[in-house]
Length: 350
Image (cartoon, rainbow, N blue to C red):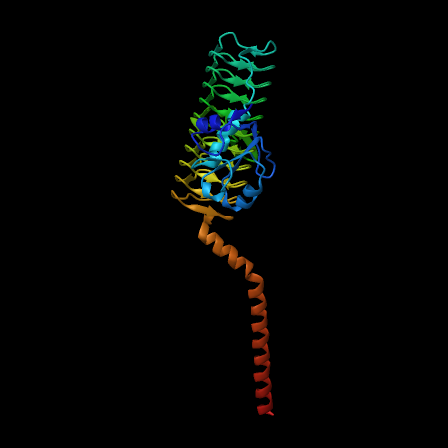
């Protein structure tokens, strides 16, 4: 795709500084861009790189940082870059229709413009909304609901009775509605507890590759509207992930834990079961959450505690070796004094 800078600025709602008739054919980073490319500056640390960049135009918030350059000025350069990528690098969309190798139950309801890829299986009583794309090798169970304008990448599995909202993206290998990990252990024997609930994924959710969201034991495991989940995240039975929350790669959340709105959990962080993290809680990477935290709290460490406490504990931990050496030195001094006093007493007795 190619477009003039004037056209692009209009579509992005940006202010053009410079010649608008120049054409751009794609977006590239500052250090890789050529005159036919658009680039972006959203971090002041890269101003020097932006000045020396060969890019034909640069998305920027403050035009004074780059005098003499052709610019598209916008208050949100990174967001504008995302939209420019959609314009200049559009993803191919499959043609509507059902591939001959797909197995679709007779009573499945397919909305207008749905595209069903090769080797897809869709069970009885399932409904798929308009313009939704179901990629190759997906398995959709019985009585599933998938909303409009949703995209299921190859090899996604949605088990029976689960519900996926509108405008969702499920990356390859996502599994929705596998059994939650529930067992009753009696006399050393683990007896499986049937998992008879469902999973509800609300509108505008994106789930990364190989994310697993377990069905509820009873009731619903819920992923709230607009949540974004990175690759390899495990969400256990009866978990509630609040609206707009972000879970980074390899996060694990145990059963029946509730995350409020706009909770953020860093990579490899984990939460034990039956906890509540209030709205806006921030969990640092690799933190292990064993208790509930109120809204707006930032936590880190193992076990997780408030961020300042964790930083203080970490600083003290780094000082342990020097404190040990000082303590050893003091012990030696005390021992020398003690021996000296014992020697003086011995001479007096003589």
